[in-house]
Image 1 (spheres, rainbow, N blue to C red):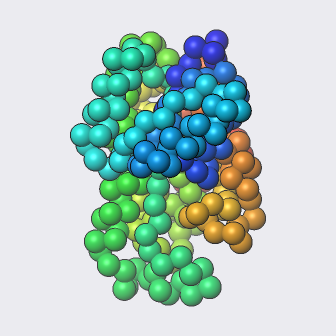
Image 2: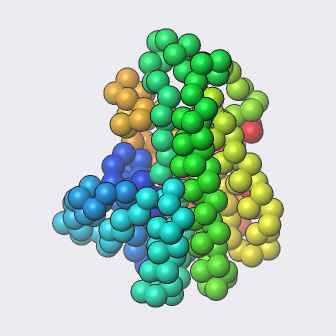
Image 3: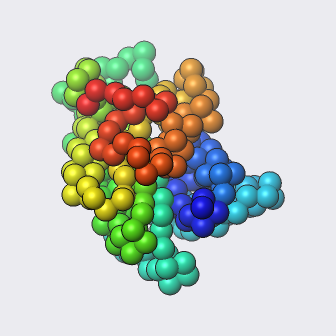
Length: 241
């Protein structure tokens, strides 16, 4: 069955997105790898193709509404379907000096940075969901995974990095909203925290590899029909919102 599934993975040129694309392809999916620049996403797709994986590159800035519309048009034109959407593309634009978190204090952060972060981490997934859910409904099946973070947990919210924290909290809210509205459509929507991973965003001091972080995302992307929807997970285990 998985050999017939088409997965769309954003932010797939490196890090978590690259690992997720590789693992979904290894599971038998055709993966459309989405990235902002042609050179980076073409190279990433070529690397996986040379390893025997069935992947295709697609260039799109997911914060651009016209680019998202063009992505949806390609999916409908070339494949007539989309089965899995992994909203992985994200940014942390505030200072990342975790030893001096006050440099990213809510009291000093530039609101424009917050707005730019929100555009990528929350509004882009909303646009992608709106564009791709109709294709899932045509097939009567779908899986949407919003790659979130424990930094967006209201239950354990602390200070600093307001752009990132607020955008991930909004992404979690989008997960609940979408799962509720799609209840009964055989389309499952979940948020996943991959943990702190060694990526360009997470830095080299992070305790987890990108491959380790990707496993929970792939788990949610390949949920069986009796799997959960509307939840927040890390490594397949529920998290508090």
